[in-house]
Image (spheres, each protein chain N blue to C red):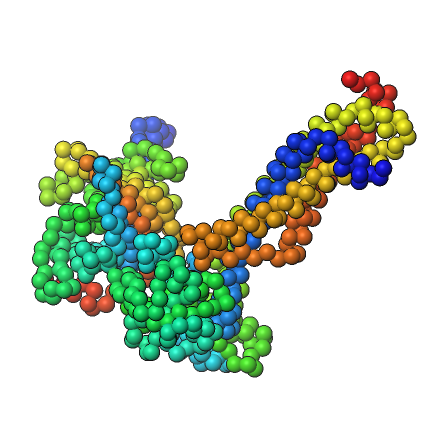
Amino acid sequence: MRRVATLLLLCAFAQPGLGADAGALVETMKQARLSEGFEARMEVATIASNGRRALPFKLSVTGQVGKDRQRLRIRGISPDKVRGRYVAAERNAEGRIRAIAYDEQLPGNIEKTDPAARLFDSGLVLWDMFGAWWNWPQQSIEGSDKVGGRACTLMRSRTDDGASPVREVLSCVDGNAKLSLRTQLYDRRHTLLRTIAVKQTMRKESGALAAKKLAITEADRTVTEVEVYSGDEHYLVNADTYAPLDNGK
Amino acid sequence: MNLLRFALDNLYRRPARTALTVSAISLGIAAVVALTSIAWGFEASWQKANDARGTDLIVTRIASENTMPSPFVAEQVRPALSALPHVQQVVGLLSEMLTVSEDAPPVFVFGWAHGSYLWEHLKLKDGRWPADDGEAVLAIGSLAAEMLHKQVGDDIEIEGRLFKVAGIFESSALVENGALIMTLTQMQQITDKPGKVNILNIKLDNSATDADIETIKAQVRKTMPGFIAITSGELVQKNAVVRISKAMSNATILIAGLVGALVVFNTMLMSINERTREIGILLALGWQRRTVIKLIVGESVILTLAGGAIGILLGIAIASGLGHLELMRGKIDAVFSLPFLFAVLGLSVFLGICGGLYPAIKAARLLPSQALRQE
């Protein structure tokens, strides 16, 4: 009888499923990101806060996402200002990101670069692409919301790591689609750095959804529109793909 | 005066209402004709492209439902396919829809194995074909040449690389006429997909029968997990865009049918309410109730038939006009089959009968004594 009473008390005062649900959702998102190799080619257009539209450019993002290591390589396709320019980065098991930049025209000229910097004068940031916040220990569900008419769960991810350029991320996750429909990134002063919103989705072979169109709105109201126009879910990563990254160790 | 003339005269008495009803029906029918012909045209164009190439079977990944199935490494299955009985050639194809000019919408860019049978059905209008697998040149369809304003010798930038136009060709399939073709190796290089293809085209020898095709399909299913062998028709049927466009045209038929029937129903109901005394006099003069029903249903059928005929012409004009828009050129090749157009006309008659039946029965049930008392 006492056991039943204790159980009832526990049920009454517990916040049902909060920690467990957050953990499950984080695990779903981490699993959805795993890939032995992928490639996405995208067109990127930046619109300044005064409405001025910069010349769009095309990028190829190649990646490998494992449990202990993530690697990304960004290659500028066109026009001339980005053509042949590469940025490659690696995130290790401790969460540290190391990024380098190099140019096809200048072989051997490899420079270290800041993973939190804007890429090719757009709202794209290498750090965001790693989705580092899914590995942070502090995760909580904050309720639910709707983005573009689709219901999603609000997830708050926090870190105390002083070296991290982002301290808090508020994601609105569609658990069934395994996709964050809106991601808001905050710095240590809780200032909103940028919002990444999914505008259009496409279905992957696994049945999960992936973003086809994204809008990245920065603090100064600069908007970067990203549209994935091609890709390969089973990209064959060869020895050359990350060679500059491996050689630079 | 016969019944048809009588019905026509009744419709002429209210020309504005008749014209509005016919307009509403014709718009609905036009939407049905335009959307359905575009959906069929899209399907037919892809099928025509596959058939013109002389492909007997296509091998692709099972999960593929996009316009172009997801890429896979050709050598995973090519040796096994080549060893199957009756198989003459196994040829890879890689394709993407890419923006190649800021002034033109995205176009299909195909990579075809150099020297394969895929090239044989194309008619060279100008220039030449790529000389070998490694030559970075393009053969472009006549429509693509027109849309991109390119001639033999001009450069086209694709995914950051410059390609010279070596030749301009003509194909019986619109989808190919609006496309750019390069060798498979070049396409694999620019899309960073070494060794990969979207589909493998299989050409069988002349002795292959339908039963042999079914046997090959079964063998692929059994021995190559994750892959499927299908005919070009089946591939097109699986295509998500074809399925969506067909679903949209079916939904339009349903909505247009419902709206059309309601419009006719409303018009005929208003008409008999205005003509209660007249119907009463006809019944008093000895008209049979059956004749009154025939008259009212006849009027509604005339309305929908006229709306249907105008709608068909309007639908053909809309679909043809859309095909000439810069954004749609090379993508729309509407197909207008006579049986379908007659079926649409039949649908119009059906709508007329459905929409006119209740008002007709209501009119026929009037008692002459009551009808004559109505102001």
